[in-house]
Image (tube, rainbow over all chains, first blue to last red; front, side, top):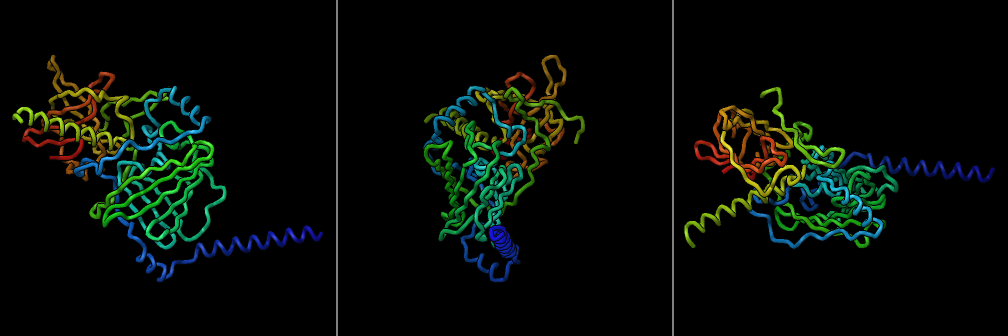
Length: 255
Length: 132
């Protein structure tokens, strides 16, 4: 009986703490919360990796580092490579998920609001929700394409931790991850309109060492994010046998 | 450097720039499995229709073949999002315009390919990296 009472008490306490946490999360932002944003490094605006279209690809870089796989995951990669897939499901309009979503040749808009950083990816019209209100990372989130993220400010750097990835996403091409993959990104202004993103992927089952890459984005104050509906007129495809093709037929309806 | 060498150098640079842009901007699908990226062909025709759509624009061109029959060719370009930020508009190419298109041909031999450049009658050139 005593034991049961203790369990009930523990449950009640647990529920009370959970409710309190929930309330603090849903507390409306105060004027001070909005004012505090102005003191943070200004990551807001539309950003894109430089392309030749803008007059240069940026400083020459060596070949990007390759993820170092454990024997079990190297075997999985060999199996996938042996299938000789022409392309990925992105050709069928499936969004890439993390970490590939941050490597597109399309812009990103960064929004800072009290307790949250939102990244809008133009490619595939994806949104990343990064909570900076001090909440802990969920212990066991449902797996999703972009994962579950929290962020914190380490002086001038926004540090974002993300876990919980769908098995339909990969670390890199033909490189699956385990359910223990974790991604840490460090976003930092390196000039008035340049930002560096250092991305480190760890996965104790798939990777022997952390895989770190760095990308530089340039801010375009004059740009806005455009619509990107991949299914609007997607003529590319990857079939069940892994062969890529193009549907070449003039649409019946003329513009 | 001779004039020819300079001109060749310039042409190579432009080609490299266009290829670079194509590689960067083709994240939606891999180009090499469907287009022969080592080949470049040219065809002249009349614009029939332009699909200013994602994930790629499509330019449909009426081309007269050797037996004087009109065949419609299809060319995949970059996305309107990419191009609109680099000098193109949805009216840069309009039905009825005569253009010369250079392209990477489809590997299956069908009438079409990846759009590289389009030269208009007034000399204006539209490229996959932007409008000149």
